[in-house]
View 1 (cartoon, one colour):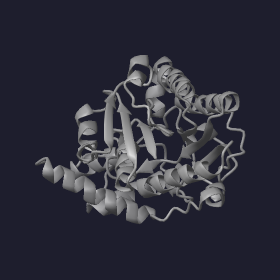
View 2 (cartoon, helix red, strand yellow; view 1 turned 180 degrees about the vertical axis):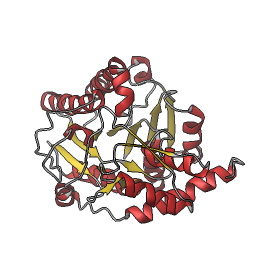
View 3 (tube, rainbow, N blue to C red; view 1 turned 45 degrees about the vertical axis):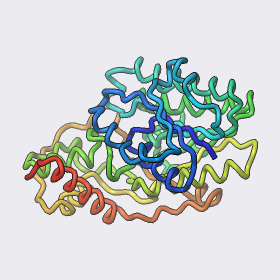
Length: 324
């Protein structure tokens, strides 16, 4: 199997590329090394993958037609993870988010149609559920009340994927990721950002009263879900599905801070700030559909996941010569 991974140098993408290579697949990685965060971090993310002869790296933007011309022809599955991410930045730049996440996805689908590539996994988000009062979130919930431009772009992406599948025979699974964390997590995301502040003796900036809840999902569980979706698509032609990939439990913001601080061996200082626009109060995944379709069962507890993250985080700082 030959797989194209867009956003290959990112947090989830780089882990996925390595796993697919370890399992003997041919992998093409497309990434534009966007400056949303330090591109040198993304360069490092691909260091191991570059040691495989079965890995082809293509630098380019999903909105650039020339980037698609540089991709090899032997591709039978696309895993689309490239996107502008983040709720709060999308409020500041809604046009940019729609350009990348919606128009970019449409151009990728046009490429798949032109090449006759039959299978797509689309990286969506739990944010599409908005502030749904019905928990846990189920895939057949309406998903028509997003509260940020980012969430709206992800829901739009799901709908565009469905339309192309119907018209041009592209089989697809849209994967709604729930708050993914683990080694290589983006530095702007809460667990990574909080860890940096904790070890530097800075206060944690907690938005709201700390009772908001997230369904945190360790990156290895997400990779299991992606691979399960790939196998499902291979044996179920004519498929369009939306599937939750989450940890199937919630952790409050305050408890998350305590867990992370404990894993790092420090005591947190907390600065309470007002809630921010676009932030949902709760995410909570019903993963029964993923279990039924391809046997998905998240196995990494939040306690174990934060321990693994802290171990990686402290190791990275030591390698960089940063202490304290």
